[in-house]
Amino acid sequence: MDDVDIELDEMELVAAAAGYYYYNCISKQPSRGVQSKGSGFMSELLNGPEDVCRDMLRMDKHVFQKLCDVLRQRGLLRDTSGVSIEEQLAIFLSIVGHSERNRVIQERFQHSGETISRHFNNVLKAIKSLAREFLQPPPLTTPPEILKSNRLYPYFKNCIGVIDGLHIPAHVPAKDQARFRNKKGYLSQNVLAACTFDLQFIFVYPGWEGSAVDSRVLRAVLDDPDQNFPPIPEGKYYLVDMGYFNSEGFVAPFEGARYRLQEYKDTKGYCHSSMCDSQFHST
Image 1 (cartoon, rainbow, N blue to C red):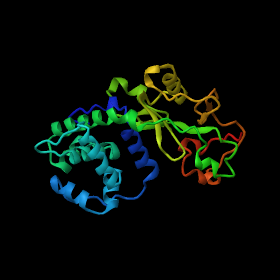
Image 2: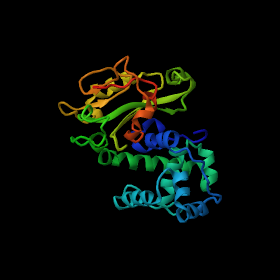
Image 3: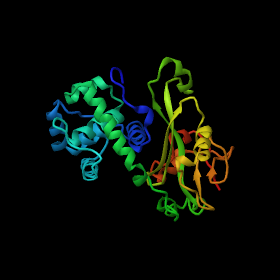
Image 4: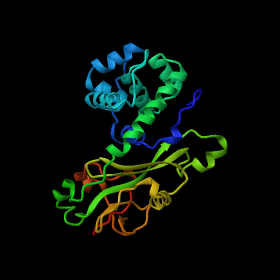
């Protein structure tokens, strides 16, 4: 952020990656927005139409309320004299869901930059503490999305998920910009994400420079036991794209086998955007 530092370099959480992915890859509807500011903004947001809350916070209203209840009941956050837990979480989601600057959030919520920064980091730490509870290993049974598809079953019956890299724009000092500049020319973090066929995140690993290739990031995860990557059961595997190598537990496309996205719409958007122009593994 421009005038108050926010600890985005420690984003070991699903919310930042999933929020940015949802905003850029799934939700393309224009935001209707909320006109009020400060306490009026929260009132209009929580008492208004469902789609307004979804547009502004990238989260359904009932999910937002349930997450607030969890954070409150477990003592991970507390209401302050001027900022409720609901508003703290809304500040956090507004930043990670829309990549908003601190000054924009100051104006919207009518708080100082220091207050915005403090509550952002408090919510960040609270969400991180829930990560291992919410990020569960994939089931060992064949996913229904595969089982019910004549095109995918039985060829992918042992596939338990997909892995790909997600580039999230990053603000870094000038001395580090060369390392964070990706092949498309903008500064980013390369975030490794694994999810199941029903779009549930299994694992998120942020922080790598945008210039780092996907295979290098995956290797770093597998070589570091502290990252707690879910063990891959014998005979099971993840699908990966051409940015990775075929290895035990990871199946990449074969060269020469063309893949067309239109033919695989029954995977519910599961294929990552980087796979759309790649080739599809057919065994």
